[in-house]
Structure formats: structure tokens, C-alpha cells
Image (tube, rainbow, N blue to C red):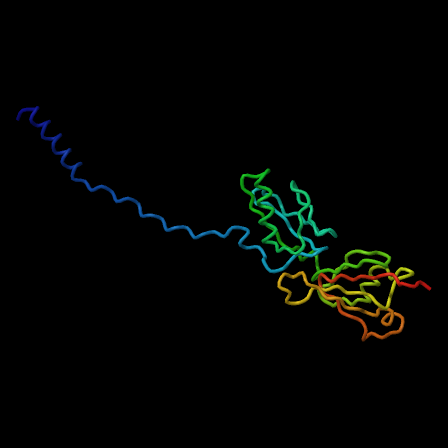
Length: 221
């Protein structure tokens, strides 16, 4: 047989085998990955921050551990990079959203902010603020496991000043069910009757965010 014819036949046979081979099926598409919640979706949106409470703050992209920051008497928290930001009355989710906007404005391309109440340090269920004729005006924490009475708050603030009106200590409290949360009511407590005369029935349990105002007597004698 002619060598040229034999070679041509072999080439045609190989080409026929290749052209008859099945094209491999494309790989099956991977199932869609489940949506991952953004950090803000997991943050508390119920509890509203109060003076004296501590929060844990972290930006995920930094890969640094959380830092503990306190809500100051002014109602602000001093955050890294940003500075003072109003915190009282806001939930962790609301505040984290504000921080994300501020950080991405000047410092980050993307900032995933994690913010949570630091229960281990705070150890309270809120705070009250005492002003006026007491030795040490300021914030008093309400312990988690027990109530705080008006007389106890006065003692914690160092007691009355010399000309304090001890029989008309005012408690300014937010009215329950107020549509905007701004309406208040004023209650009067005779703390002198409690401390000096032992009439404990005249005492009053304080609630988070109460303001205790001790005024001076109109006639000091």
C-alpha cells in the first residue's frame, strides 16, 4: 500500500475520533451563599444609653480589640478619631449608624462599627442626676440588683448643704407614655422626714433618668 495513502488514513481516523468526543458539561453553579448580616443588624435597638453607662466600641476593619468608653455627664462619648458624639437617649444601633457615617466621611472607605453596652463594667440599670444644694452634685448609678431611694441618693451625693430645703426635694421624671419622651412630671419628697425622723414611708424609689433637684430654702434660719 502507498505510504502516503496510509498516513492520510491515520490522520483522518484521528480527526474523526476527536470530532466525535463529547464536550464536557460545564460545572454546576454553586448555590447562592446566604446573606450575611451586617454588624449594625445585630446591635441592640431597645436600650437607650444613659449618663454613666459604659459601651464597647470597635471598628471591624481595624482588627483591634474593643475599647470601653463611658457616657459622660454631658451625655457625650469621646470616640477615637471623631471626638465627642451625643450618646444619651440613643440605642447602640442608632449611635453606631451615626459613627459609621462620620468615620467614612473622613477616615475610612468602609467602617463596620460594633457598639454594645458593657454590662461587665456598667453593672447598673441606669443612673440619676443630682443637682443643687448637695455636697457632690453629679451622676449616681442605680445598682442592678436593688432599688435606689431618694434618701440614699442624697447620702451618696455627700448629704445636704447647710441651707438646703430638705423637705421639698424635687424629682423630675419623664412621664410614662409621652409621645415624644420629653414631657415630665415633678414629685416632691420630704427627705428630712426620712433621715431625721425615720418616716420611711415618705421616701421614694428613683427610676433611671430621674433628675433630683435640691433647692435652697427661701428663708435660711
